[in-house]
Length: 158
Figure: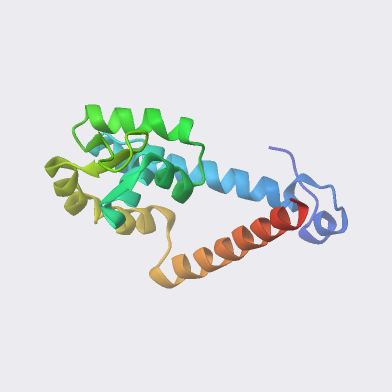
């Protein structure tokens, strides 16, 4: 690793890598998602699949488009995730009774039972990350503020 300047020196240089919010967020994101790997492997989920399952555990039945919207992903990205979850017998896909073009996703009994196991994941992750509930809430609040600011900037630009 390179020896870096003191903290004040980095803050005085607006182009210092260590002072970039994008760099800090990218490194933190990769680290946190990587930390999830060992927690999710026993239940045969990747982190993106876990996010789909979280959405379904919360809402029980969603269309593919609704899942994509909640996860802020393209529907084409969600489709292979759901297909893999279907192969694991965690979810089932069906055409909407009201509109054949709409694909609805629901939890199978296996997927519903998996929710009980998954309830231990947030606590395990707090332990892995050395955080308590208040720390997680504070971090979440900051992240939500960043997301809202990005959304507002996109709305202004669009």
